[in-house]
Image (cartoon, rainbow, N blue to C red; front, side, top):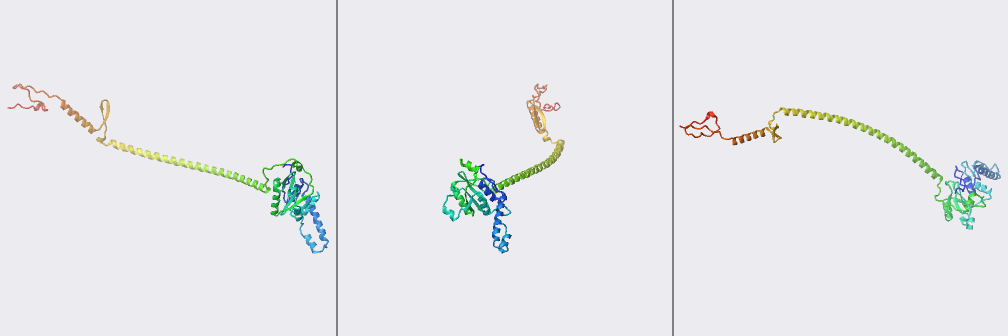
Amino acid sequence: MDSIFHEKQEGSLCAQHCLNNLLQGEYFTAVDLSSIAHQLDEEERMRMAEGGMASEEYRTFLQQPSGNMDDSGFFSIQVISNALGVWGLELILFNSRGYQRLMINPINEKAFICNYKEHWFTVRKLGHQWFNLNSLLTGPELISDTYLALFLAQLQQEGYSIFVIRGNLPECEAEQILGIMRVHQQQRPRLIGEEEAQSSAGRSAALGQREMGVGLVEEVVDEDDELKKALALSRQDIDVEDEEADLRRAIQLSMQGAAMSNESSEPEVANVKLSSQTDGQTEKLTAEELRKKRQAYFDRQQQVEPSIPQKPNAQTGSSGPENTGLGEDQQQKPSQ
């Protein structure tokens, strides 16, 4: 594919690109085609002058712009035909009755020139394969033999004028290389406008992503600042709450201490805890329990205490009455 000459579109010089892609080389420039256009304009002017230079038709012709070229770089079919005539080539209208009666299979031709709305491009056979050499494409487009007729029919349906190239085309490197080998195209070329639009869209997307990335960074920075401020305020609030909590605890402990002091100053016997030693262990007793224990102890002592013996009676020789628990000064008198 690299051996195929393919001029890409520049401005409105599609006629120049069409001719050079057809001839497979830089054979024509815009200046060359302009010279041919001026020559054609002069020939037309001379024919109009034959009717009289003072005629209305002649003055109208002079006022009209050239029909063979314009400032944008467009050239007419007459310019292309004259340019090809230099190389002994001629154009035949593909859908003309004369050509259609010949019933020639398109794959047996050498090349076609197509035109639609002032755009020209070439379809040429190189070696044994057909290629679409449209200057609006990013590169040559391979066309199979079976698809060529459908391709041309589609162009006609879209309004294209198709011309068959008759004559011997100049030799070229691509013709020699592709004459002994065939090429395979994995991916068809895009239109230049689509590629530029895609590149522009890619650049815009990349720029948008960069701007979005900057925005995200700024937003993240702003969020970090806000988070730091919120944490600082939260710590201040926590410090204030801690101070208030400490103050409340201090007041509560102070009140508890005062209450304990008041309770210790009031004699509440029922709640007083006393200690006594029992079998080597300390037992916590109330005053009432201690009183009951002491009373039980005294009762046991009175039950086990032995009787006190009386003094012997001189008259009877018997012992006196048993101790009743009275004192010595209260002894019973003998009966009379």
